[in-house]
Length: 443
Image (cartoon, rainbow, N blue to C red; front, side, top):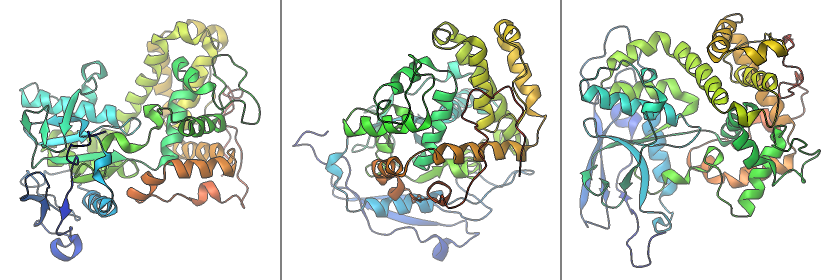
């Protein structure tokens, strides 16, 4: 919190919002001028945000390269919507700084949030740094995760500087957000379904006595989705800090930072293409146009496998190694990376398979089912997970993340979660006893 005698972190009066449709039109290459008045300098700071909702983007690039589709995006509209929502909020409640990634050449400033493609964008900024220094990198997946540690830079909201020295005024400032219901399910699949002893331990205790059934595994490996959500509710009520993978979006201070662009995981490809095109990284877009899906899948397989193999000895204190590999298998099924085929290894084969061999098996399995079937698995698991949660818990979740739903225009009562008048097929995708069985689709 700011000291009592400190001026508010930021107090913008927006004199004119974006009028995208009226002034720029669907194919405009023009821009609106938005004037911002700050308490600090008692003057006007004029920022020009170029807007395009059509097929042409003109920020810092010349003509659209051939063979690249440019997708429409509502990122600027979302930023204007956010500013409007924040207009009457007292800015003095916010911290003065936020952690960011920053690229000086492109004047790009990004605020990372866990479970919101933060690893991907940290690698993008490392790619930009490489290319700025002449170390040509085609796309962010060529950057090893080990070479893209989380940024330690901080942006001073009041002074508009990075680490008190680099002037970040006029920067393109963006963040990614996600529907909280999707965020929580993604965190559960990634950190609980996938073998992760440290996260099992973190989430196992608080809620176990309040949910039907008990967490019998001493490590919390059999934590259910209901237990997981109840734990979040309990931690919030006790005013404990939520783990970053399930945290609210406060770390990016959406009502204090004047964001240029609000991207969403739900429109990841369109928003990502626009941002990377804005950075003039056409070589990346040429690769992504044809290979983004396969690059993402390969990266997910390697990441989901390498972690558990590196902390194997912690895992086998909780569950057997064959069970751990089955959990990786199911995690990747639920994420839509691999398809309906059951886990094919015997316990003896699982105990002796090398990491590289298991990765190769997963990559081979991926192409045994269609992308449509893999997408169906992801949607079905989401429905089964939320169907298992009582309404009172869902209401608590809506309350906890009410700001996130409101500020970023998300529906807090989606029918696929709250409408239970229709029965759904239950394939028990969150039941770890049937992973060796093929999943028979009944569409």
